[in-house]
Amino acid sequence: MSGKKRAVAIKDKPVSAKLSTPYPRPVGINEKKIPSNVNVRYLYQPSELDGGTQRATGPIWSLKVYMLERAVTKPNEPVVYLHNGPKCGFVREELLIVLPNTLLPPAQVMLNSIGSV
Image (spheres, rainbow, N blue to C red):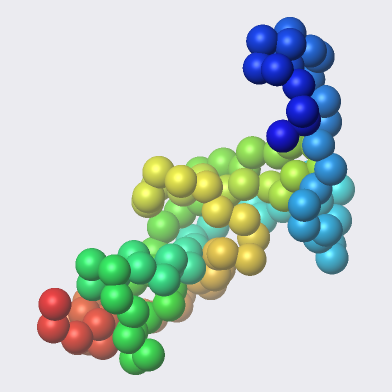
């Protein structure tokens, strides 16, 4: 990508890259963080349910509620949140905070909204 040979590029000093997507909000150290020990649901990826298909009536948020464990901050990058669910990180826009004393539908109702597999 830089036009240099691989052996020469490996020896070069690291260069900070510009963001490919400008964020319309503060990121990194200036970003307002969601506190840990907050219950959240995460946004499903388009192919995460039903083995790669997504239905219009299917859920878009996770069926289970997870607790945030920690937040990872790097300069000039959005804060990445980790929780006790899937082993991947999420940014603020991919999380839905579940307020205390919120009653979710029973698991059977949630599973029926997905449809038969």
